[in-house]
Length: 328
Image 1 (cartoon, rainbow, N blue to C red):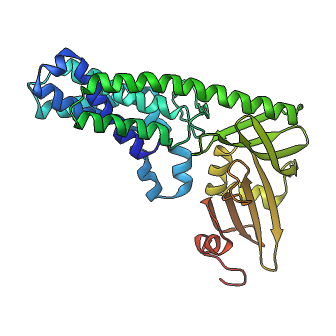
Image 2: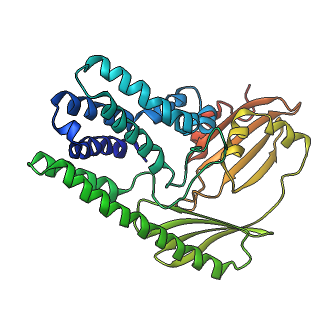
Image 3: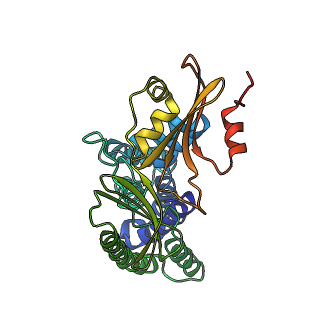
């Protein structure tokens, strides 16, 4: 989920914790638990700082080790131990319990969006992504905000958020039903599909669809239980040419390939350089595919520049690459 949603979830868990007698009967414990749930709801995303290095490092590592099983066990110990230093009169056990719930819930809800997490590390490096909730879901965020307003106006925070979370359980179940309907519609259109990727959007009834069979890629949009195919591409295996093999050694393209399961590729030759471009087919927006990896190589197959990430115009891409044809 996005940062804003994790913040309101941190407050919500602090309110839910008031149902715990050890929390509600101690001001010190209640204050420390609220701080802990706020920090615990954010701490797994500390790897966002990797963006300061470059997109390749971020793509490879975001929601990786910081969302792993060891991290889910270690974060609560670190957070509750630090907070207890400032609130020695708090109930340490219950402080740890609610910190653990906050950290676990952060990782757990991240599993439900299309990006997913490596939550099974170190036992498996597989990305677990159920793809039923968008990274920012307006309904989930709005329900939490409503709960916070009710808390501010005097309603019991514990029972308020207990009710909201009960509603959200049914909401998640309904999202699975919605996705299943889209999948059935895809299977009717492409009965020989070998892979079907369905991703939610911020719009309640709208879904992104990417499909593969043995010979083609299909890109479409789902609405309610209907699917419309917008683009089709022939599947062309990536050949083992010297240019493409050299490009694959680039860190940006390597990161892209570790992240993207559905893509097409292009290789263009110009007067003084080659350009290799890989295009993720999952994120079609207004007829454009903004998530790409591009590598420019010299005629001697030395990497001149590269980039991976979101790009919406060729001009911006050239600025990211810091390489213009015919220069340098």
